[in-house]
Image (cartoon, rainbow, N blue to C red; front, side):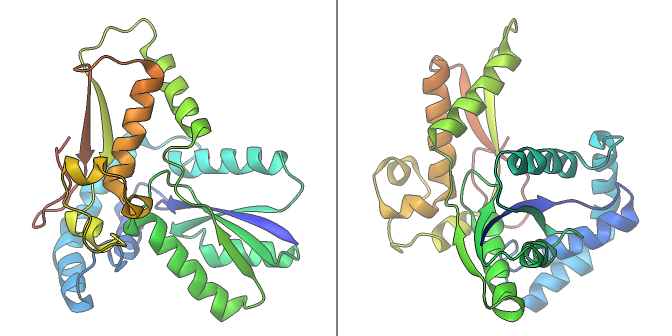
Length: 263
């Protein structure tokens, strides 16, 4: 029997520091997020970052928290219900971090007799800190707990027509009747070394416009290329003039060179 597992990032249980801290610990201690040796990662995360960041992040979470809960969780649940309503096969929802674990999602499908799982990371662009960490953990859990299951994963959908159209429609709706100077496409940043690590050719990536614009098999796993391609396709769809938009990367940690330009 076939089934689908939708996987998103995750969220703290509440916007309070006591719940934000363990969430950040799980997230930042992921070796695919901060890809340095364990002891150095533990020193950085538990010795430095978690001393102040939980309070700061809790303050930020409180600004966006909804009455129903975390916006990411609420919207993911809504999407889950809509997807399930469109198919007769079982659909489960899981998070990479937090209480709604991938193992629980797979267990839910297993309990319904599912043996073939379509693993669907809900990230349009591929990155080791988002897509890869989901695939690796899911495979580890499969081997340990559900060896009878078979996985097929959904590849990055950054350039799929339906995604581009839906994204463009949302942007167009927001821009109606609004005079703007620049439309800012702000993607989450990642360290430049992550781009090089996911370069399957081991030689194509130069972190500049030349490599992203030159066709290569590396693009299947290149976050930078995929972000620029999403922007290009949306700009083309909406016929946004040159000079009326800019692409940037947000949220970075100090110490390493991250994708530029910074938001």
